[in-house]
Length: 543
Image (cartoon, rainbow, N blue to C red; front, top):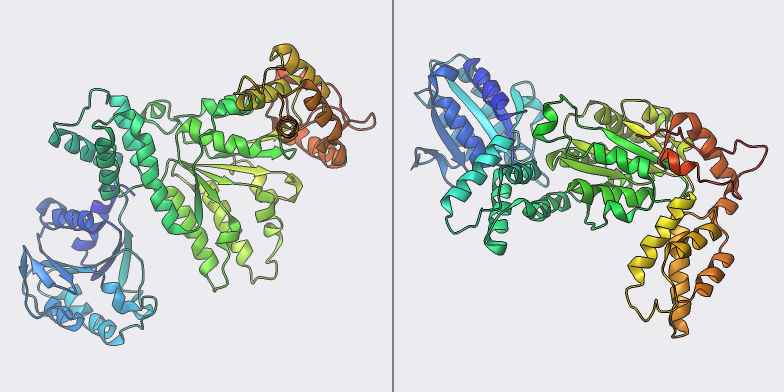
């Protein structure tokens, strides 16, 4: 909902004499400002109204002047009834009398509110009451009389106006490197924050080094991390892994790269929707989770990890509420990336029944599926799975994910690239690397020796060989790598049947994460047998 939408809706409710409106928001000042703007406009509501603001500490206040004797809730309701002018009454945190946690419903106050409904609807003066609170809580007996609205978070234009105002008011801040593109990136990154939170992030960016530019995105993301931490359900993953740290998988990386910045203003010219997400399945240890982390750095978006174990709670209804809260948080900090690791373990069997939990699992699964299908906020879902056959069929149909990628055993070229990554990352000391001739020949030889190894096993080869050299207090030798390779029984041997089944499933249902040209270099390994389809899994497309 945009700001214009909330103004339109409130204006209509005022004109239609709706007695009670419940507006949920963390931004009390911003909400009051919007209400005052509406109440003063003849164009919007025809009959302008005074705006009275009630708090338990001050009672009613009109234009800075306190109304004595209105601090108690009952006296406040009496004042609303007897007020002889057209008015909007904003009741801040009045929901505490509706039964917040640890407190009983004040039925006397609720009855008092119900008694004046007739006066609000048909009385001589136009009056509307707005309950302003950060959480939604309505007594059951008032549910038919209260209209609920959510105050939207600031729009891009509001955040841009706030940044421009801060820059113009502070002449000591260096803005020479802040071009229009940089402003857009900063403001886009701040979407999902309240105006106060955005202002705090911009101010911190300015005081860090006396300037503000497009490089201050990390400060904005840090502020978003605070929002996520406060929920206790989603985990903010802080990673510095680059997409270049992922060996191979060029098809998958190209697909992701083409969709970078698809939520920007320039993408709107092409009428492009924000991508929904991607499901990455395949052999364990081949870089699925690593790709999710690298994607966050490449797209410069916050990476949120959804753990379904944190969703489920013993209290009735709280699990469903946790799911809605997780979704709302992900959308609040959008554009963002929502990562569900090993999704088959979380959702396995959910589509088939209640699982003995009175249908809680099925309801949570249904909420998640509906959101994936209908979401309009730019939240990109990246899910990884090792055993795709355990996933409910509803999750795999088109519309949930944009594409399903299959990650197979690394090809010869990919194994060379993985060795190059891990050796270059760890052989930084010249003394440790003095007995190794680092060259393409070395990478080629190691790649030939590790056919059937997954990326995680190749990394372990390098680490174990370095431990051997460290123990003997000498440089790393080729023999250390060679002996380690000989002593490892790869996953392609221990889980041959499972990998073959995965390949057969992926042949017609998924796109290979490996580039088509690289697949031509793949030779048959231990995992393949003459009586089984020996092609690599996934449709060989360049995307």
